[in-house]
Image (cartoon, rainbow, N blue to C red; front, side, top):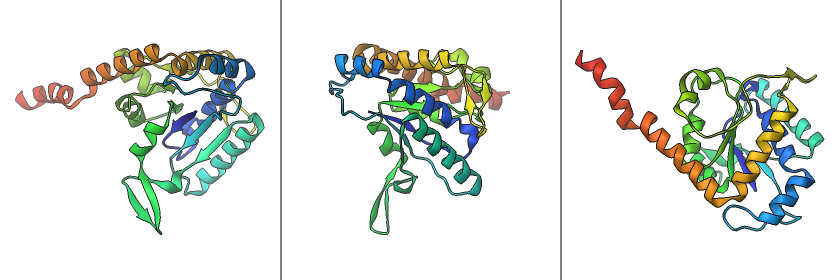
Length: 226
């Protein structure tokens, strides 16, 4: 079972919160629920099933390299499996040194849920990408989301909007109760096909209403007809 994060260029992305979330999902109690119910698409969840946080972004500068190592260390301490695939993902499908390169959109069908824990975004394209891919998503309520998006009524798994503190490595933390509540919500979305379909369909309709090309025309036409 995999959770996708598609960009991690710097520490404002808050990926450490996704690691805390994945750790909470992997507790014996929640694994037993997964085993009892099975996954949303009929796949069984067994004792051998891995919970994997997949990172498809890039890590090519010194600042990011430091952050990436901190994420790796945190994941190892928490028993969370990370899979970095930035070397196999590009803007478009291609071949590089006889190795197939996949597009970013190729990664979405392989995911069961999208994690989007950014502490700060200018707007946040990944939200609409998750909606278009019809995947449920987890997010931290960053300022632009709260100001410009939240009132549109997307159904999300929320990590709240407050950083509790930062650990000795400078990695953000939120209240443990929020992580636990998010994990419980995710269990339902990952195991209940009807609930999951209702959520992703609702989010798709919301995006069509407010963020489609038709809605863009509605916003722009008055500016050109004054």
